[in-house]
Every structure is written in structure tokens, then in C-alpha cells.
Image 1 (cartoon, rainbow over the protein chains, first blue to last red):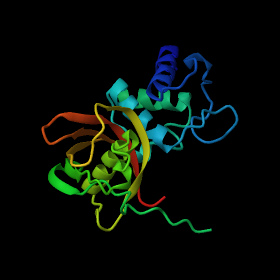
Image 2: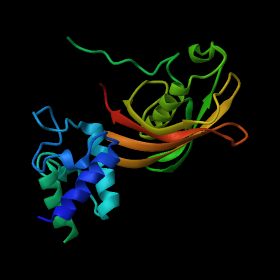
Image 3: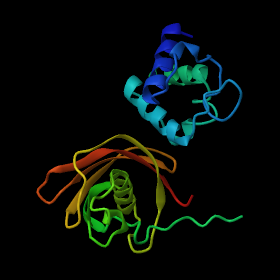
Image 4: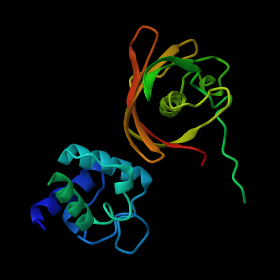
Length: 87
Length: 132
């Protein structure tokens, strides 16, 4: 998977959610939501912000059912989701 | 233990009613700032209440009822700026439009104006629909 896409997604996450952290410190496979160790601990409000950001940044439409367990589980999953939707 | 959510009743009900609907989740709501409201006894409408006012306006346009109480609650505020604090006697209009939705979480953009059309506040609020 493209490192450029991962970098873009990580920068989007930090910018859209106004996180005070270096995007590069987000692990590719770390869980974005929930309280798991090493995860970002995002919540449902963050999820909506992330959806709006992804839609604007990549010009794709995110349906409710696509969000959650798979598509937004991690940076890797989100990159794969964006790659498939943009194909 | 069951949790009974706080209803949007006086003195925490700020939006009076829908003036105009311009879409399925957009329109204009009116709010009269009265001297009797707890929130203006200190002579000015607190800035935080303006964000709550936009949220209540959004929920009214989503099918809520000012008289019956809440259909959701304010869950987030972003990029919200206040140009001036309303005072008793102000008649405010709140224009609200949906910015995005994910399940029961909905983000709205809102602009609060006074009777002369001057901007009072503007910004985004996120509401969670349903009870807490």
C-alpha cells in the first residue's frame, strides 16, 4: 500500500480532529476507536468528523454501514477503503 | 440505575419554534430572549448558551418539539464564534443546515442573527439524536 496515501490519511486524521500529535507517530495498524492499548481512542463524534474529512479530501461518499468495524478500524483499513472507493 | 435525561424545559429551553423550513434538515428558528430567563438575569445571554441554542434549533428542524422536550442533546461544538452577547428583548433568528450525519450523530452549521440581521454568533454543533 502506498506510503504517500498512509501519510495523507494520518495527516488528515490529525488535522480534522485537531489532535496535538505528530501524524507520523500513528501506527499503521493501531485501532482508531475504542480504548485498546496503542489506539487513538476516538469516539462517535470523531467518527463523524473523520467521515466528513475523508469525503472532502478524497471526493468519495461514505455510507453509514461502511463505517465502523472494517473501514475505519485503522490507518491501514482506512487506506484500503479509500483505495477501493477511488478505484 | 436508570438515568432520566434533562428535558428541554424552561429555563433551559431557548429555541421557541420553527419559522421556516428550507430542506429536510435546514431552516430558520426563532428565539426571544426574555428578562425572566435564568440565563439573562446576569444581563447577558452567556456565550455557551448560544451553542446550545443552535443545537436546539437543529433538533427542532429534525422533528423535535419545543413544548414536548428533547429529541437529542448537544454533543460537540467547533469553530464557534460569538460576535455579541444578546440581551433581554432581542429577537434572534437561527439559520441551521446539516453538514453531515453518521448514524444518530449529526453535525450542523448555524448562524444566529438579531432582528436587524446582524450576526450574533456562528459555528458548528454536533448533536446526538435520541436520549442520553
